[in-house]
Image (cartoon, rainbow, N blue to C red):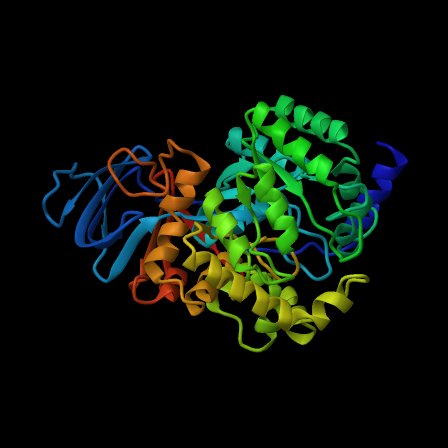
Length: 456
């Protein structure tokens, strides 16, 4: 053990680690289940009074109540008044932090468990280092329960660019130093290509993340040359480039360079009519991530939800409710001063993109300040509903449409014979009230019920 590693262990041990709600396989969970007389959202449409038979990790049959022949040994789950839907999908998460304010971030495995607790069974991890590698290995070996993981490598940025300043301010030293050392940075096109090649050679990644932004404003920004080279090399290597951008001009640069996905609705400036049309014509989906702009102040203005109390460390809830402003040198002044303005810009851009027919996928940027794993997606969906996105469109975006984007041959994100049985059973009807998705009765991962262990 090096002196630096030993020092890191001492420092981290002395600090409190943030706790989260968790899951484990239900001790009495059956491998054959009949959901009887349940309302079914199959990923595209609703059907009432349905029976769904699950066996050996997959949906085997779906039919009107009483129409299926199933083994008498199957566990019976009464579905009257409940809705069965595919497990939810968050298209923008991080596993290196959990939205905490002080304390040591929980492990990636703990964050994965919190996501499952909230009914999220698939995620796009838009940037991750050794914490992600460790979770993938633990998941592969059956040592950890986590959502299905689609990954994009560490993420390419400029030297000293985002997220280095954020990590240096939000994480205690030496953890911040260790995390910053993992970042992939490039000053030139050739350096960017080399990083893409290295990521492709690692294997396991389907996407490649590129950060084309200066956050905080005025900090280091990736060059256009590096952006274009990274996107070109990613496509040559069979990786799909996803781009983090926040301004209209940066977003359009990413579109012009051939990005496969934009992971934020532009937040710093309004999109023009021509810019919206250009994004729509390119057919590039946009991930929402809007609620993160005001999440801490929203939390301070209301009582925590039951889901928040069950998942989030009580001390974290207390700290954010008492002091919702970020305390991050270089960030707080800009973000807190312009918070309402930035949110209004993002809301307006979201509406215009939807009106133009741009595909919206739902993501949270889970892990940034105040955006808690699992909780963030439910808060995001409620916000999108308030911005005019119908419940049916939200449900499709968070299940079948996200699945189809992530994997053209997806066996998840829908309820149909042969589909993987990643399922969410909730009380009530989310087609009439998206908030019903938080009234979770049970979560199933590959047909196995999870025991949900809440903090409250």
